Image 1 (cartoon, one colour):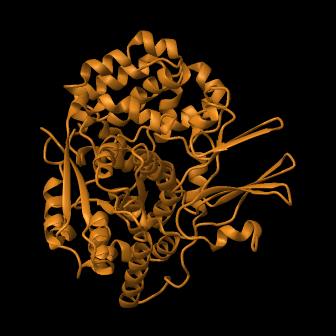
Image 2 (cartoon, rainbow, N blue to C red; image 1 turned 120 degrees about the horizontal axis):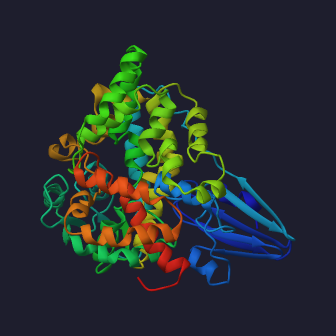
Image 3 (cartoon, rainbow, N blue to C red; image 1 turned 180 degrees about the vertical axis):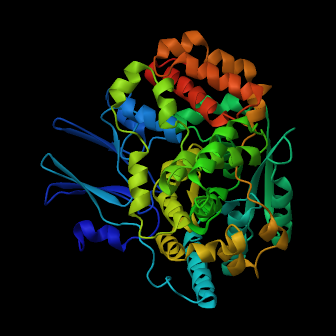
Amino acid sequence: EDYGEACVEHLRGMFAFALWDRDRQVLLLARDRLGIKPLFYAHVGSRFWFASEIKALLAGGLERTVDAQALRQYLTFLYVPSPQTIFEGIRQLPPGHILTLTRGELRVRRYWSLRPDPEAIGLGAEEAEERLLAHLKEAIRLHLISDVPLGVFLSGGMDSTTLVALMRTVSDSRIRTFTIGYGGADETYNELTFARLVAERFGTDHHEEILEPHAVDLLPRIIQAFDEPFADSSAIPNYLVSQVARRTVTVALAGHGGDELFGGYPRYLGQRAGTLYDRLPSSLRRGLASASRWIPESVHSHNWPGRIRRFLEAGSLPADERYLRWITFLPSEWGEEALTPDTRARAGPNRPEQVYGQLYRAWESSDPAERAMALDVQTYLPGDLLVLGDRMSMAHSLEVRVPFCDHVVAQFALGLSAHDRFRNGRLKSFLKKTLAPFLPAEVLTRSKQGFKVPLARWFNADLKEMVRELLSEETVRQRGYVSYSYVHWLLEEHESGRRNLTDQIYALLVLEIWQRAYVEGRPV
């Protein structure tokens, strides 16, 4: 009543809401700045639907027609970016936007844009560390406000350990921590050792669950929670850790956003290395790109041969195209062979990564790593990680809070230079230096792990029959989305060990299970 549409500018944290102004006859929908909570809508003729889940809109009788352009985006990114959804006519309100509906007239506008905090730019190292620590403590303090028990998803990595350590400084309450491990998997996937170390160091009430190959039996339930194809396989451990946490708490904190804001992915160092690599003669870079196809990939978690191969494959491209190649899973030249003629025709000529390229180039920095991180905060974070965290937790009626995604923390982090965030070529060097007095040395020196699943091994062993059945020639041709020659190539390359194509195979598996459940309406 006091601020009208500007009310959103006075809010902090996660939200998605609808307000009906009876006096002005205006419906207002709003979504939080970074896209932590979802909000979907459809406007057909004089009718307007909105909900926090797509399934609620489908229950209202909306058509279940697959949007071919969104399908191509899904195969490219492993998720459908806002404002589209996999269904024609159903839209997602983007982060930092509001929607108003006034007597049938719909208007969507941005109320907040991601910008680096001017106060962070040019600060001395000591003062910047003090301010960052203050911002993190304040964000965590605000996220701990609750009248119910809270816990933390703990991997023993930098982000989750930071949450546990700073929770200890702002609260005397006993901390409950939850971790997922893998039975029979090689040690490159298991994080139990580090999680146990952190739990012991901070005296938490620690809970663990072991994930086995039969966990993929959960896929139908997981896909039901997303309502549309979503192929980040870490949804599986996130689903299970949420299930474990919900047995004892109703709210849990997670470290989403730490990698994108503070530089936790090796690909950011790859962008910095690319500026040096570009100095080599273009003929040499093209030759190395051609020769890289002979590098066999690994099924281990880190897959360094695969990373080297991808770096060399894209090494002759400009910085923006190189980064887009690293974060996409259906390059444009694959798309011509992968998609059926009908899908290509309905999807149109625009390449899905074009919008991402525009966002990359629009960021006001000449540093390729800073541009890459800003792009990820605007795309991968809200489109993948925050979707995953929200859907998997809410499937168990668990509320997940993400302190790193506090917009004050995010803006301050993006004001730090890449030089500071990657000092001496180390990932997250600024965050590590800031938190060094609080964290175990073992956490500060461990390499990046990630919340991954050993699907590459499972696809060649325990799950091989399931993959072949769901992606049979008959099924693929019946669907008509992708060509069977592409599917056959994926499976042959992966099983031979020439390439690790786990993500592409998993994306097609998810698509098939989703198709059966949501388009055909049959049990899976």
